[in-house]
Length: 498
Image (cartoon, rainbow, N blue to C red):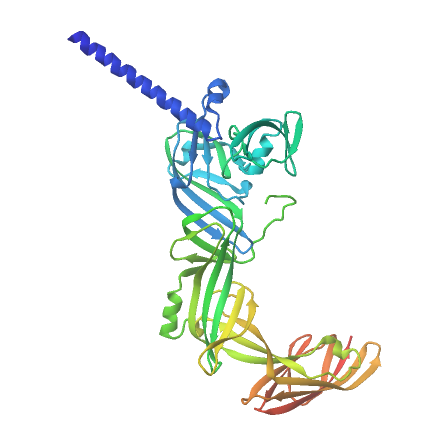
């Protein structure tokens, strides 16, 4: 009986050892089949005998954050929980952006910073594709499967001679340009990978790690768009701001923390490379905006209050801000040109008058949030209460307490007419001229028109029917009230020295 128990114990131990050996063998086959690490080579190469393979995919991801900039660039922070064997180990970090900038990659262990050291870092992007697979088999034998006239399949062995503008095969003594059937390759080349991957050679003194990989990538861009609803009395407006984010980086970011940086971040061009709050209701609306704004360095940072998934080849819109009851003023502008003052002018045809909206981006005007550059589109209700498109304009990055000025187009019912009534050339660089500008308002409401005259050189207005304001060294502005369905004449004389 004792001998039987001893024999059974030895059998169980032997089976356990065989099972362990079988697991190692299966594990070796898995690594070899993954196409990124040759385990057999490790066993035969004494210099590589201490390196242990490992890889991580999106399945290991614990967090991801995306910070997008205005210049088609984004910073990715990818956290993953990984297991590594101690010693020198190779880590394959998969599912990174295809437009990654490898020189910007950084890896660190958050859970055990001193126990994970980087010895070598590589970025592999020789991706699997029909052309890439065929290129690897140039000069080698492949199998060709075709269908005969009686709808049966037959197989031939051919040598792939080239694959430049199309495959060239040799079958027996004949050369074939292309083939109507299917090409069967014996195996996948080990140097080809399915996805772009970062590969590190690490010195690991621990086992489990929470790691964070950061890198810059191209292919992610964002812009701001604004919807402006102008009240019928044209004295107030409602403003909605939207962020349009486009992801063409080659990766998907699941449940990501999203931040946007507005401002002109300097980017070194490489020689070569790869690819408010006044009323209570308005205050509540602004506070409820889903993006939080803060100053960051010399820029402004906008953070989405919730997480979002950013898919590859996706355009996503998220709300940036909302404000209602914003006070606005409509302005009319008739503008002249600098060359008017250097020569006699022919009679000008009536000219259109530009229409502008002006609003102050300040807290007491229900705003006060730095506005990223973008397009503001203006809508206004007609007599039936339906919104109609009234015009659009692009704004620059606008800090708080600055004025937003939008050009909507030209007024249909307001025109200006300029006549040069006198021109004298006193000397080669010394001229004197006089002008009459007639402003006609065919609207049923009174308006005010700014006549903006761009006067070059040194100038002095000698006579004027309406007072002017010298805005700067080359601009005089006359502000002219024009009654409803009426006209006003502005006349002035100016002396210019060039």
